[in-house]
Length: 408
Image (cartoon, rainbow, N blue to C red; front, side, top):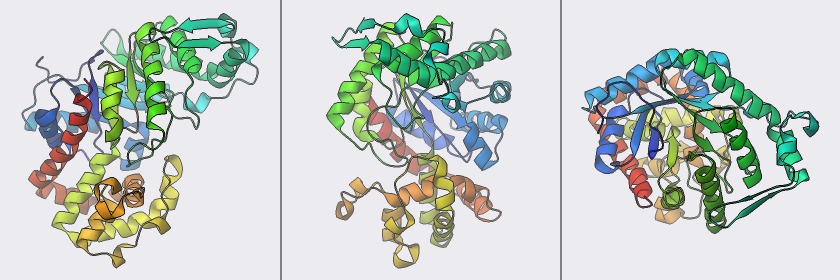
């Protein structure tokens, strides 16, 4: 294990991002990693610009809180730092100055901006191209397929390359790595789209360490994978084959929180070249600690979260409605935890439901944490009960890491 007190690039090693929206979760993340994470490198400092905005945290605070939490927990090994979903040069400058070294580029604002595919300089290169993958799959990129990819991603790829050049300039010789996110789209990323986008970025000189496609199936916040498991695994194998042939680079699983059922196949298909991002699930476990210590405060959080849900869910992929989760006044403490914090598949009497309560509290974190009274009360409770919070996180994330290690 390399001793390091500062974040460093992690390369092609399997890695796991422990997003922390409060700045208090790292000791629990370290405990989980010690329990079950050997062989998987951790990223304790991981936050998107959207999350920083919603929680009123600075990039510097995110990095420093994670480093301090790891140090206090006695962790001295290798760790990364992921500046997630960057869209502008200002985002890059802000996060680079704070010490991030892993930059996740999100060009989703530029998807479907090329009205005429013939205006995309590289489209002709892919018309009629056939790509034979090592697993036997052939990607047939006929003219129509190439034109659709150019129309969808032509401007987005150019923006991602522009941002990557800006990272090189800002980092001024310092080590860094780049992840490209193309998962923020309604439709799954086709094999042709993956191939073309990654090929263009690599040919530009982008230091691509991982790519996050929009996989088939549903990756809703706070719940396990929904969809055709066999179809997902076949598609995953093909995407992994593209990454191995063009890079190699890692495949990244966004909205990875609580997707335990697909972790073994994800690790196995990528042959251990993977990155997984989690974020909101640590906030959910913080609320579990709140419930165990102060039920009244937890009920206030749920009441306020239900008020905010219809507004806050707008930028998240969720299916829950307030009507699909019982109001807290109808529930005792045990039922309250089941309704708002448990994965429904873990609660026998609720099998087959879709965890609406988890999604309601998952997406309203920013409103709660910036509330003038609820936010400070939640944070102070966690500071006063660090051992409880850490133990809850340890159990929760050990399950995630153990599931991934089954496939390595």
